[in-house]
Length: 430
Ligand code: ATP
Ligand code: MG
Image (cartoon, rainbow, N blue to C red; front, side, top):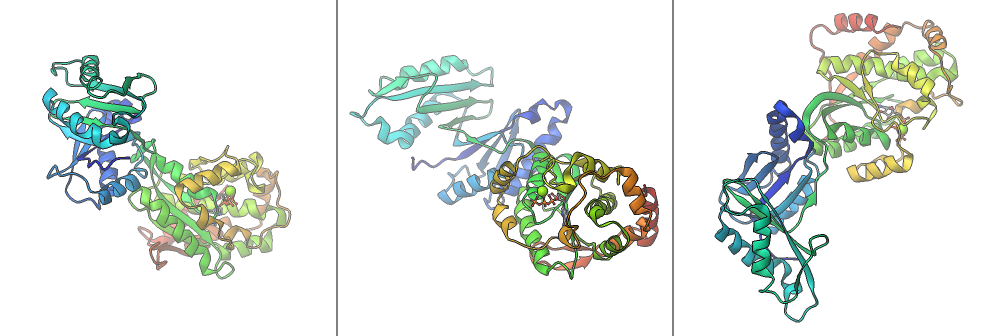
C-alpha cells in the first residue's frame, strides 16, 4: 500500500491497565516480552506511558523493510499486546503534526488521492492525553478536516467507515501519528500469572493448551512422558519440535521427559486391563505434581477436552484429579476437535502434531478402556501395587531435554532424591 518509512511503533495494552497497583509489574513484563520478540532490531528504545509503550530507534532513524517484517513476525507472539501501529513520532506541537501528516498522507494514499480518481472517505481519530496541548481531541479532528478536505478534491468525510483513517495520539513528550492498527494476541504478558507445568504430548491439543496458559500470563515448563524402548526416539524429537515453536512465545521453558515404562509394566501385570488408561493418568499426575514442586510451578496444564476420548469423561477426569491436590488447568475442556485444530494452526504446531508417532499412552493401552471409573474401584486396583514404588520408578528416569538438539541430561532433584521422592510419594498416596 505504501512505501512510507515509519520511525516508531505504538503498542497498546488493554487488561493490564485495569490491574491497579500491579500495573507497573505487568508493564515491565510486557516490555520484557517486547524486547525478546524484537531482539533482532538493534538500538530500540522503549518508552513506557500510561496504557501505551512507544518504541523508536535511539537514532530516531526510520525502520527498514526488514525491520517491519521482524515487527510483524515478533509482535504476534507478545501476549498482553492488544494492538499496535507502525507510525510516526513527532514533537507535540501543531506544526510538527501538520508537517508529518502533510508528508506522509500522500506516501500512504498517493494513488487514492490523485485528482480525477473517485471519492475516498476520510476521518481522523485524535486522542489528546496531554491536557495542555492547545487543541482538544475534537478540535484537532476539525482542524485537520478543514486543512485536508480543500487540499484534496476527492476526499470525503466519513466518521464511521473511512478508507483513510488517521490516528493521532498527543502526549506531553511526543505525538504519534498512524494510518492503521494491527491486532495483537491479547491476554496478559507472560510472567503476570504464576508459572505452570504443561503435560505435553505430541498430540494436537496439549500445545494449544500451553499457548492458552501463556496467553493468560503463565510461564510454562513442559513435561512429556514416553515409554522407551516401546516408543521410538522420534516421539521425543517430535515433542522437541513442538517445544521449539511454543517457546518462541516466552522466555524458553524447561523441557522434561519421563520414562513411564517400568511403572506401566507393573500396571499392565497387576491390574484389570480396562482401567490401565486411568491408572497411567493418575501416575502421570503424581509425577507431574512432584516435578512441578521441584521446579516451582504452581499448577498443571493438560490438553484434555471433555468426552474426547475414554480418559476424558467427567467420571474419569474426577478420578484422575483425585490423584493430586495440585490444581489442574484444562484450557481446552470445551473445545471441539475442529477448534483445537484451528488453535494449533494459529500457534504453528498443527503440522508437527499431525506427524504420526507412537505415544506413551498407547503402550499397553487397553482395547476397551473404562469410561466410567469410580474412585472405589481405582483404589482397589491401586491396592494391588505399591504406588510409591511406581512413582519412584518414574521419577528415577526423568531427563532434561534440550529441545534444540534433543540432548538429554538427568534431572537433578534438589536435596537427596530418594528422601524427597519417598516423602512426597507417601503424601500423595490415596
Ligand atoms: P490429541 O491431540 O490427539 O488429543 P492429546 O495429546 O491431547 O492428543 P490425549 O490422549 O487426548 O492426547 O491426552 C490428554 C492430555 O493428557 C494431553 O493433552 C496431555 O496434556 C496429556 N498427555 C497425554 N499423553 C501424554 C504424554 N505422553 N506426555 C505428556 N502428557 C500427555
Ligand atoms: Mg486430546
